[in-house]
Length: 362
Image (cartoon, rainbow, N blue to C red):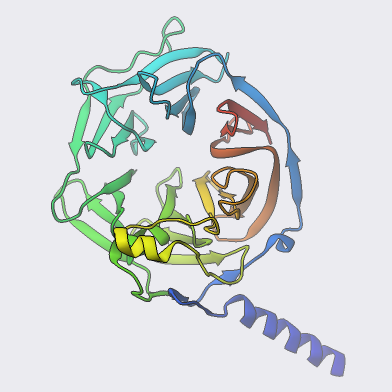
């Protein structure tokens, strides 16, 4: 009987520990589950294969539509902004957008997203603050033919500045502001144009610095589930994953793999410039987050600027259920900066530290 009581007490204490609050100089976090690398029972090593290195470019972010792989080109010397490839035969299909000031050109791109009905792919130009949509068309003689009739949404707003990474919902879209942090994101109604700020009341921010510095420290990567029912945020510097429903209600928070949060940066230069200036001790958390119909994939860095391997690339990919349960951990043989999961073909496509498009069979 005594042993049974001890077991009950231990289990109760572990349950309380998993939901214990976290406190730091910049934020208090309540009602959060914690994990670390030892929390994963299953650890799987993945070996990469080069997908396509025949095009001279610098691919960063990737997106997938059916059998078409999109890659954002960060090479300033290139006139292509978004390239397309066939994942069926690995051929280059052409450029969906060119870089420039022309009527059908963009200056920059931060994401490629599909519309709710998957009929259009949308690219956000953060410089112009416009969201451009083109209809997805089938492959024709091995050439990708985007619809020339672009749909353009001007998201420039004098009240809400520096919007970034819009993503379609069923009846609107979400977007965040680079200058806001208490407002985790905004939900826009595409019918009446109304916008609603989404707050997470489990996060108590301490206004230690100006809004722009705090907004950068607590900035996030974002994605939604294919059925548009859940919105997932993963912190760029705070290793926190937030899971919301499509109405902006928080459902789950996961903190890990670090227990504490003590982000280091150049305080003096940041205060002088009114913008975050990182130091050699600045540490990255999540680099990218993607969702399938039943899983969340989160690419975690955990490295600082002084690490030998660039802290914006990582070999660690955590996998969770949509309820926040820990499933398994992937160890990649090559560091990547972004990825997309192909559920149909059990494959992960990624952009590597060697500026290549690669893939992993899972």
